[in-house]
Amino acid sequence: MSAAGPSGTIGPMTTKDRIYRSPAAIAGGALLLAITAWLGIDALVQGSGRVPWLALAAMILVIPLVVAFTLRPAVFAGQDRLRVRNPFRVIVLPWSQVAAFRSSYSNEVVAASGTKFQLWAIPVSLRARKKAARRTARAESGGRTRGMGGLGFPGAGSTAAAADAADGPLRAETDKVMDELRELWEAREKAESAQGEVSVRWAYEVLAPALAGAVLLAILIATG
Image (cartoon, rainbow, N blue to C red; front, side, top):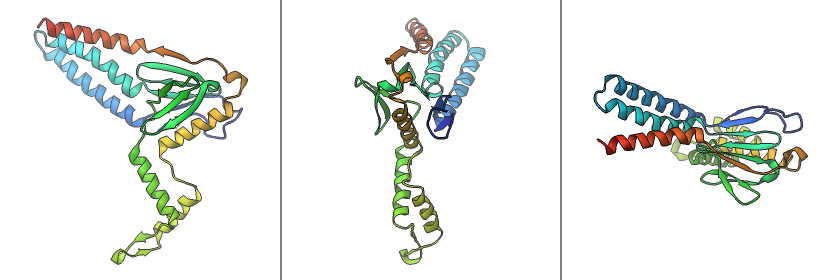
């Protein structure tokens, strides 16, 4: 995950929002958009008959959806509120309205009302968690590496493990992000400026073109 914003101690001097997004999703989205544009433009230019219209309708449908699920998701953590930009909704929670952050197979923020909102921009990586758990276990056991005959000999691995152990338990990157959000929430939930109500807004800028593309594509297929 990438975080843009102050990286120091959370406190009154923090003024800018921390922005969390998924680099993997952004890279994948850019690739998908490039492929969609390449195929779509080729069909528009080279196609004949109904093909250009079908290609245009498909592009109007697909491009907003690709953007919604890859480039759009982001989490903005400020002094007074948490703003979650998911594929089809934008949720704003003042810190006083946050009840908990939960991490299992997905990362979620729970509002005081009990409503759960998934943090699309902070996906869970079970592989990263397992890797961090293995490194933590290796550090706690002294970091012995297996050598000749399957016997354990201390070496370079033990030095690295000792350094890991000194830094505390290892965490997956997205779990570290959730820890940062919890720290900010705990520091700001009682602040006067962090009071207010939860607001949820649908992303019509994504839904409208996608719906238009779907309707146009359905009409073209039905009349074909």
